[in-house]
Amino acid sequence: METSYLASIIKQFEYYKSLGDKTLNQLTFEDIQWQSNEGSNSIAIIVKHVAGNMLSRWTNFLSEDGEKEWRQRDKEFIDSFKTSEDLIAAWESGWACLFNAISPLKNDDLERIIYIRNQGHTITEAINRQLAHYSYHIGQMVFLGKLIKGDDWQSLSIPKGNSLKYNEDKFAKEKGKRHFTDDL
Image (tube, rainbow, N blue to C red; front, side, top):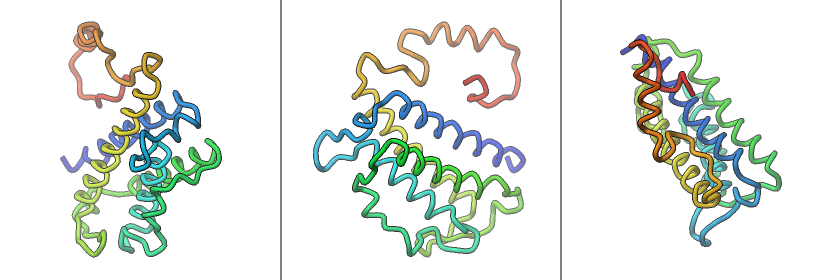
């Protein structure tokens, strides 16, 4: 596992980023700001929260607690984006911080202890925690995008009714070790 974990986790993060990217690309700025009610989160709010979390967790993560003093988590749940460019810049900034932090890691780093709110985690545990957190929120973004776009939504996975063809294409290839996102 050690030799493949880091490469695999980077591919997983890239996959979830691509789902978020593809969702954002299908929506207008007004769509991204839509809330079903005052207590719900828009896609814009989810983006702001995910980006804020990434910047806090991954900035100097080897030497500082993952919950930074400068983070204002409660403000992440207030949409303050004025343009789609601002929103995309925040989204990209969070992802860049994450990838810049985990890309240089080596297998020997995985058992090192880092802290999030004074709770010790191995780097493996911290990565897994954040992958689950981000995929949860990106799933919310995709779901909201599907609701907003309705019949105009372009599927991000195997469209309904296409499973047989998808499987035929997969089984037509030689067996081999590859990541499920390699063909996307």
